[in-house]
Length: 208
Image 1: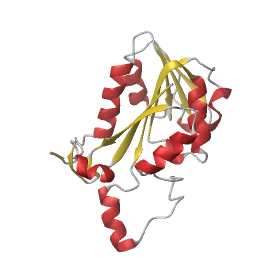
Image 2: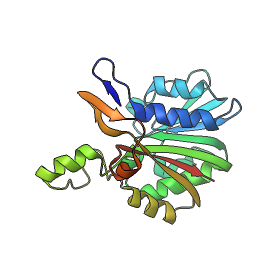
Image 3: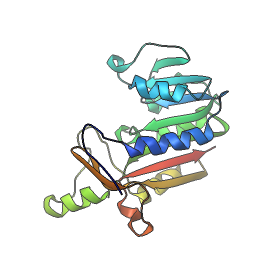
């Protein structure tokens, strides 16, 4: 079990997806980051590859190009307008897919820009994470869209989405079980199998 408080917070969902990223990326790789508005994250991705293309929807959030990082302004649903087909080795997106109106279109656009045998890494909140389930015992089920989220996903939701997509091979990994959010973090990094349904996040690996 991991316990941490401000200012020593540790976002295990980011750590987990970065561990996966380092397994797949190479120094010769062209990497795509979708939702590239945090320069420190993009620079971390850029350390391990030849080039990063950062795609961001909001003009005011687009950083300046630097070193091996190039930014493009675009909506994930229309990715192929700014990224060439079959040009990306590794695609990376953290906490974005839940904001996208047409998630199936976005996933299929991702398929188009990946090279053959390319890999996409995505993470997203679990609709049935433990804290949300407990809260909804008292408040009733949250309806969507909610705030900026168009939806959140159970594992069954993700499987249904991916079965409709162009991807035929994928892995869904549960990440974190417990309290993982301000003001307190008390959680298990490895999700007990019996509690998989109530993990905090899903990490999805898509293989072209």
